Length: 164
Image 1: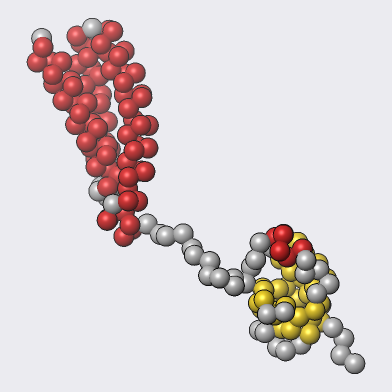
Image 2 (image 1 turned 90 degrees about the vertical axis):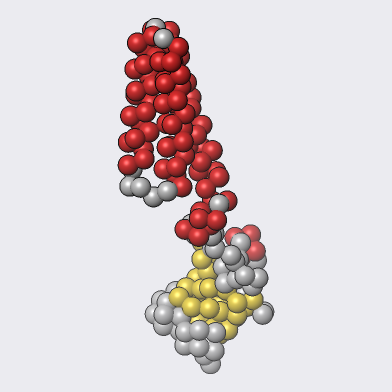
């Protein structure tokens, strides 16, 4: 009778190993299916021994599955394989074209020069700061003077200053 419990525990351990392997080895879900069969088989053996052992096995499985997946997914990006297949977050270089919203509030009414044609989006220079802007309407040519007329979130809307 003891060796049946040992077999059930071995199936649970195999379940753990297969579930962790599924995160690291692309198998198209085959390892997960095998892991679930191990979990079901181990639970069945526990229930054959006693109802209390079966319920304990189910509770252990319910606690173990999310814990293992969380551990595996936290560990995955730190592995060599994980680093080669996951994307790194974008890095914003200094002097980015879209500054934070509080810094933009000071630019309302500011006058700048268009550095790339606004069709309707382009880059404008405001006292040495290059910022992405949207033309109020139409096309604004390069080197034209513009004024900030509206700030909405991180979007600056500009209007070309009339030429005299």
